[in-house]
Length: 302
Image (tube, rainbow, N blue to C red; front, top):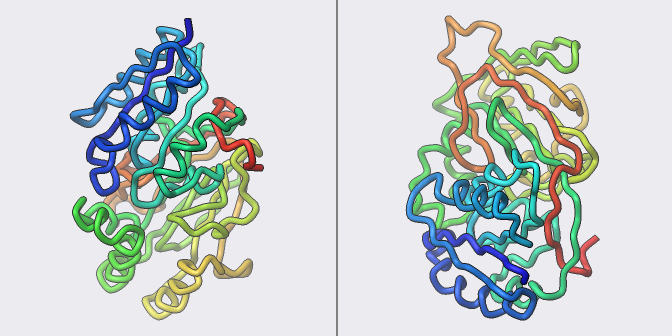
């Protein structure tokens, strides 16, 4: 007897989870003998539900929600010895992983392709004791994103992040970062540091074109700027996916690294943004687990 568990965040996207949960259940009943819906009510529920499902050795785990819901499910599955294949219907604001994997951003289309799928192994990152599947961002722009109300994220989508990022330029300063990357130590002044597993960052599909979801590396990009004028000049390039490969950008790919501030007494410790939600404060340790989990992707996706 086969079984799938579907974890639904009813408030994701424009509160579409409640509508699409039963639709997903009906579609998946074509593939599994039993399909159980589990509805999240608070932070951490998706992680608990995914962990329980993995330990019960179900045949598959699915999620309906945004990047935060996907991240919670990953944190329930990734530490386990038995890791069932994972699928999801993107309902959130940015949905970077869904874009990379070729999953339709239209929920109705995504539901229809549930039965036309294949498995793909992808890398999983780890920041301190938490796993991530998309991005860790640090600096004035990610810090500003934490202040975006849920209502604005729902109404404006990625534009809400961009607007807060632009406003942050006049309010925040450049930070002195230290990157210890596999023994190589570098110091960089930056207002935006991104560590990504894929080439889609905040919905921008070419911000880090070298990155691939299964290459076994984390990709670090730090945008250099010493003053507000330089920041203003670089922001349009960032959001157009046209960051130049020159002295304005520090780029490395790695498997393990530590990131800190060179003068923590002068600067308040920075908080990270992990898969779109609030993460740990600096300093942080990062590592990657190559092709650690299997995900369902549309059969036509590369």
